[in-house]
Length: 110
Image 1: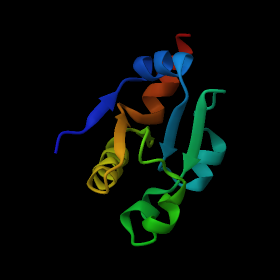
Image 2: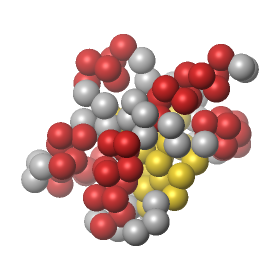
Image 3: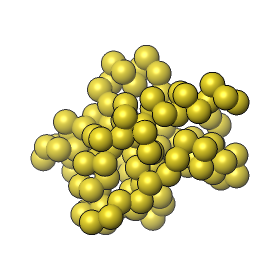
Image 4: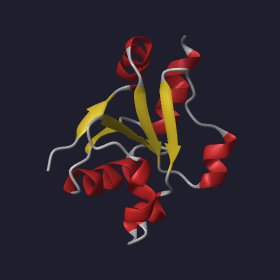
């Protein structure tokens, strides 16, 4: 399965034009410390452990199947695994390439 990816620059441009659903799969503590925020971002935190386990169905109630979901983690590896699971369940998942780390580097240039 080939996963779709979005670069930090593409995400930045996209959120200037439309509402974006962003699923952060990092642990809750990391999410609380820092996550991508913007008036056009609907930010959700479902830790990867929930997505890997059977409890995912309960957590996924808040995820829209009709919209793109940008999946982010620290570097992009866990997000890729989570996006695969979401795609198998018919969600339109796209991975933030390089994760929150790449996003923070990109934002420094803005």
